[in-house]
Image 1: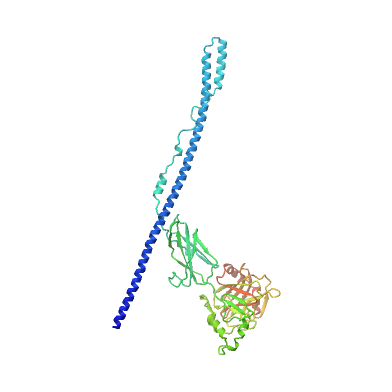
Image 2: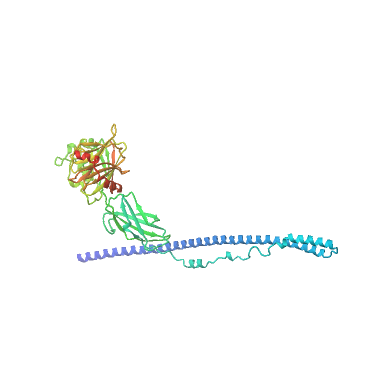
Length: 505
């Protein structure tokens, strides 16, 4: 009995679910019918507008052409009337001479006759009747202003609904990924003069190949692209790849999207590790700020320390609440795998990146607040001592800026310093070639080289930052800039001051 009841309940549940599906489908069909009616009405309205516009153009052309014919008519009539007036005057003069000549025939005196004949001859010689042209100056024909609309009629009879544009084809070989920009190029499978613009869509992903339906970010759209190429700039490459697709649009309709392509965009991404930073540092993802009250707030917790771990409950809470970092590149590992350790203490106002560099070439940038008194930017091996300062051990390298009293700029390693007699940039680029044993610092704006350390890294390294009285903002997800790659090729063939500090170490 219980089994039959359970079976019946499942059947009822299935029927209810199916009924809901059918109801939803019916609602969708009704909604679709309404949409068809609305869209058809809109299409007719747009068609009326197009034909009204065409009628307006034809009326305007008709008025312009009729005006031209009327002007030509007025010009010809005026010319003929002028010629007619001239002929009438010539005719009057000729008739007067004819009458004078007839009267002269009645003169009997030979002398008088000869004198009259001479006067008539002179008058005839200058008479306009013998100089005028008896041909009309203009023709009465108006055939040169006739219009043949036969080609236009054929063209109008060939008017059809706009075809749906075909899907563009992305030219992967012409696409370029460099300097955190992506240049996408595409072409149409066949020439289409009706294309008005293109739409480019892109989204970040950590999966190679075709886009996945689930678990992906939404497409970002760039509309109204007039050319067959577009450059996406200012991107943060915090994923390994990017999907891209393009569609062509004419005046009325958009075509299908192109087959999506996947371009590799991986770069070095990390956050600042707040779990072991100095208590006087306030850390938020990629920003660190000096907080003189941070340590005092923790001293009150000493009586409640966990003796077995050496960590206060607040520190444990901080570790649990630390936000997850973005996905990492294959050439870097999360710093959390190094194991737990104490926070930096004393005058080591330090915070490290949460991702270690184990191979490859990587780049990131740092910007200090204008009122920052002292800060260091560099790298260090894992697990430095809690009182260690960047550049004062043989396992850390950095450049240090001190704006206290007077500005000093120096490169530091193994407690040795080399003064850099160059202006301090407002943004510093850090280039780490792990396999090549090279750490270089650049003016991030001009890409001018500031200093280069050369060594052989024997362990993975972590980005490191020291800050006192001020704040630092770190920019990650950056590719190695093309200008830096070019400078590295030329610099690797040189030696001298850029490596002198390492030779001392």
